[in-house]
Every structure is written in structure tokens, then in C-alpha cells.
Image 1 (cartoon, rainbow, N blue to C red):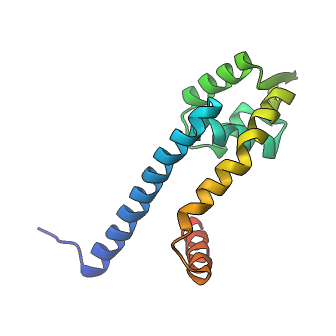
Image 2 (image 1 turned 180 degrees about the vertical axis):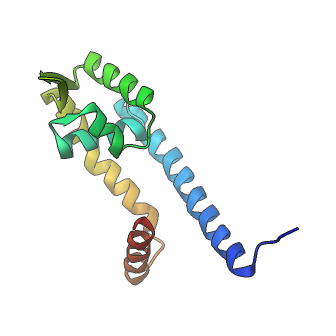
Length: 140
């Protein structure tokens, strides 16, 4: 039976650590965002809409780590809450934030961003820069 090499074991350990960090971060963020009637997925979607509006549902789905059904369900909820609007242009429906949706995002964006950034407080400035460089490399 084939076994993992030492190098592969170290890489797997790195991956597991990253996964655990993301899970811990998501739990903390979800707890924080409850007060705004949001969770990490909803927050991410609102932010992606803001950054790319007007955006089609298909384009939005490509930017998120959600299923088509998950995106569709969240869009319906956001529309019912008055946070987004959909406008038909020929065959495409474009999604944009309403003033209410923008206010919702503005209310929590800075606080959520600071909370996320604080996860790296135990790293030195140099370590944060190294991690940013490594993260960018992993994404390419």
C-alpha cells in the first residue's frame, strides 16, 4: 500500500490547518453577523453585489462558493427583504443593491472587516505579508 511522503504529510497538515482556521473564522463571523440578520454567505453575496453591480445572477454565482439553488434562494430572500432589486434587460436580469441593502452592508461591513482582520493579530507584520504572498500564490 502506497503511503504519503514526508513532504505530502506536511502539505496535508498545512491544508488541514487552513481548513480549521476558515471553519473557526466562519463560526465567529456567523455569530457576529447574527445581529445584522446575516451570515457569512449572505454577507459575501451582498458585498459581491456591491462590488460588481449591476450583476447577473449567473455572474454572481460564479463569484460565490454556492450552488445555483443556494444563490437563487438567497436572492429571493434579499428581494423579499428589500435589500436588492432585479431589473430585466432583454434576456438578462441584473441585480443591484437597494438603498436598504446598501445601508445593511454599510452598517456591518467595517466592523466585520475589523473582526476578520483581528484573526491575524498574533502574527507579526512580516508574517502577515508573507502569508498574503503565499495565499496569493496558492490562488493562482
